[in-house]
Image (cartoon, rainbow, N blue to C red):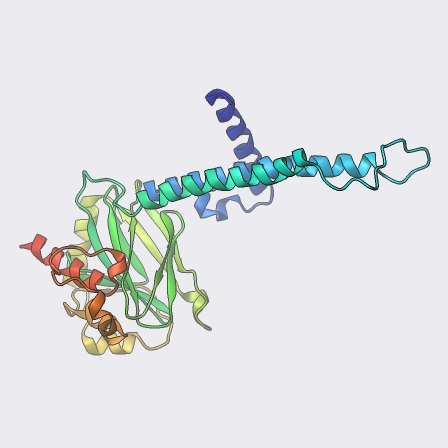
Length: 318
């Protein structure tokens, strides 16, 4: 199949799928179809490939179903060939086993390639920032180790800058999700996971916990506000000047099951993120931690990921 023909077929399938979504009046609600960053854009390509490869099977199957029902319908004088003793066909077996296997192989290889590529920052020409994320009942706490500020239920980021979200939980396991910017990542007590995201244009993007966590789950949403670097710096200065400090006592009250609005803090205890990990079971992962915490650990190193990230941010600040 030529590249030009493939592009035409891809366009036809995408137009047809998009038309169906908008015909139902729900198109704008599908955030994953409106990517606002390089990570989400690559993930949209995976969705497009999945849809196209699936249609290669679905469309012929539905056409054949209609043809068979019409051709072999029960009516007087139907002259369709009737072979009740026919059991199998090697050619047909090859087709309906070979094509799905080929599709799965193509989709698996492409998905794996994109997934491994997204373990690194979307771009390397801009210095990334780190934000610690802690899921609580039923709210989200964001800590900026480089800027020394914290927020609840909203996070502000500069556009065009990779953001390293390091995530943990001080409540039941949850899943951090900003569909317009990228896929989900779990937050787990006693561990730290990582998710790279980036916004390539300004705006306010919807975020939510993707795991059901009780009666306050519906209110466990947050906003991701993407602005220019200068506006981001100005916002940090405003938060430092006008917001109260997040103390350990305040945090203990904040972590209790409740729903709150958006809150800003001018500072936070420097080891709050790591203390949360260790208090929730991180101490049981000592053998899995590297001895040198001066470099950023991989997500598989669990709780050490957050501590390593903080050490690196402290070095950058110096």
